[in-house]
Image (cartoon, rainbow, N blue to C red):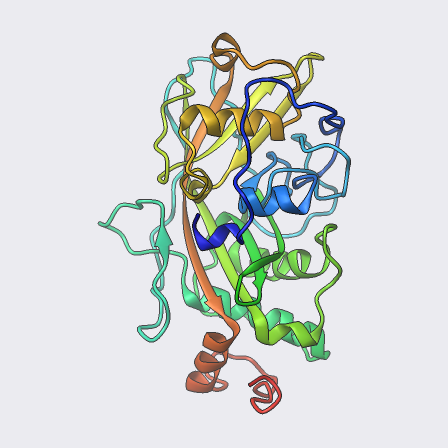
Length: 333
């Protein structure tokens, strides 16, 4: 199992309904999975297309189910309009969100971005600078400094997720994002703090945790509706499914591109896992799978440790417009 799964055993998948399962997700504006172990096993599977999502497939509001709804939360900040993920009536393949041209590239001294097979003909949009900005935002909040000024990387709108992990085993510490395209400056600022402080599965982050943190920024791109629920590639595409449950209610669920590969799942296992995360409790048949509406997408991901962040800040020192002092290295060594 890949390290990103946090050492948790893989989920046991079955097309039969789970015994003693709880309710399948009522109306909620947020989404993440119902239990920590399930979240870690799925790592970055998402629970639906609501505006505020955690990266793990259930209700971010702490509900009993693992489903989600399509309703965006009220007062969610950020620029950029929302994107529609519902397949068109013709069920043809169509790009719903194309990535803008990249404006910046990662610093040579920092890790390069991980992409779900983005075309090599264009530069990556996600960059280490974005992770550094997230660390800056969190650091300023925890120490009461004025928030960092506008960063230099592109401010194009993207659906995005900010993930925090902690410790040598990289345990999940928070993961919330959005499927609505948000301008990156405001979107990363908002979801940095939302994922660090308001993920209902964890207590708010503290200063003492900073030295052990890892920050990941994921930008979602190239949304396409497909007719065939098998028309996607493991390890390349993230998938979002929409289906009608046994009670006649519409439900959605999604996994980021890396999840199926990390878990060692094939197409059917991934689809069945998503159905269960979405709250479907009846037996899963091949005929039912054919009724699923599926959207595939890709992502760009960058991860930075706190130590790498410190090194970057030391190297650039105030050149990125951050007005607060550098973190005390003797304290965070």
